[in-house]
Length: 183
Image 1 (tube, one colour):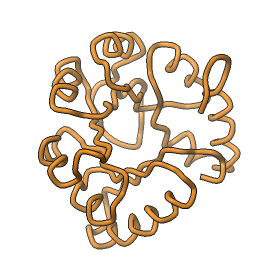
Image 2 (cartoon, helix red, strand yellow; image 1 turned 180 degrees about the vertical axis):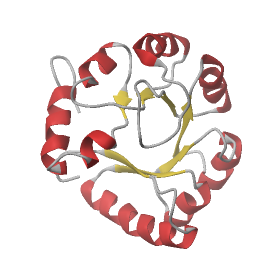
Image 3 (cartoon, rainbow, N blue to C red; image 1 turned 90 degrees about the horizontal axis):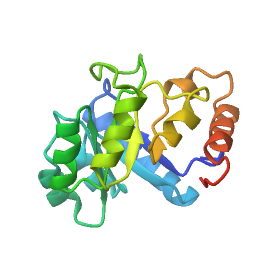
Image 4 (spheres, one colour; image 1 turned 45 degrees about the horizontal axis):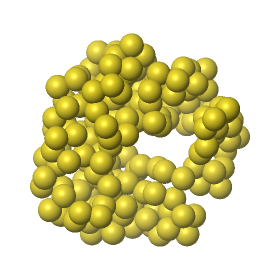
């Protein structure tokens, strides 16, 4: 957050729910102090318990309507999508944003076949909610991703494999805030 990131998500597929709860409780407070939006991946109940800003769901998690019951109407709910049908359905069910991808090959999760930039542009034309690009986003391709309709991008590997996470985050934000864009 000290690098200027204003929206982040905690994702942990290995730890116990109790450990995830303890971590996100601390992260929720840190995000508030930094005035950043903080979402919990997969666990709407944990997001509600710590009063996080929202949840990011996968296709196998709670339905959006059930997450909304837990979180209320003022919390952010996003969902990963991998096809036009999933994107349309997510918007119809009340998602505040959709993640779409993977756009490029990624090692952080098995999210199905690579969708590519062309499909991102198609999805952008189909939905009115913000579209966040997921999968293999890096400094080398972020401008192309944004110029093809993404409202934002989820970045994991490019940051976590960088020699200095803060410097890489600052570079990414500079690339994002190129001509005509703000972070």
